[in-house]
Length: 254
Figure 1 (cartoon, helix red, strand yellow):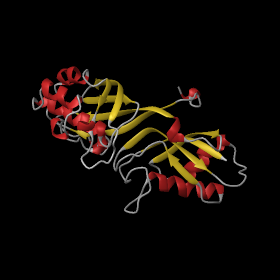
Figure 2 (cartoon, rainbow, N blue to C red):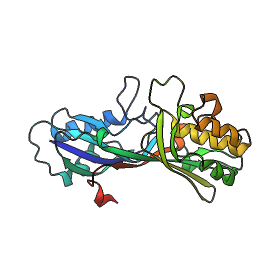
Figure 3 (cartoon, rainbow, N blue to C red):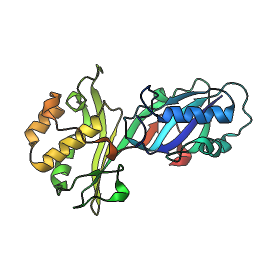
Figure 4 (cartoon, helix red, strand yellow):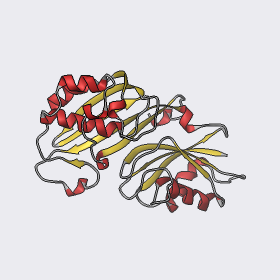
């Protein structure tokens, strides 16, 4: 039997979602909780990887249990949360067929990057937003953001050393919203390269600083080299915000 979990987490104390030998991960925490409630090891599969320190307002994962569970899906979130750490929370469980593949059903994702642009740091946003005290030119960033939507070769916005061959992605939206000193940058696409959103944000910051011109940005988006784009923004401001599936399984969540 397989369950589709809708969850959220703070990534501050994790080395990302996927299990790895050098630290705590969200996948390992989910696996440990699932084994407690289903009384057997369970296969946990996530909708994507997230980097160390990155958060998720919405994340999707499947739990594949073996045997016959007597726990109804409506009770799975509360049962999982009993054994999960406080920085991970399951909000919903949906029964799916045994051949359901979460990664094949993802049609797109939306990330949001949060920047605290106040003169002094906000302790309540520590590790939850990037503190950047120099006043950002948000209008210049918005003008630059209009160049990103569309289908492009985004290799200039991929971390060096990545072994991905196909670097073409379609960005459907890039918008910037402000609320007081909080700047939120939303990026939606059919897929993302390693560190793509963080490099886009770093590039927009350098546009604000006057370090990157519109001509240089156009070259980078046209499929330029990594050095044409800006720096990589730190991970603590990044959130996986929404996951879009090619099915209406999540319709009740909309």
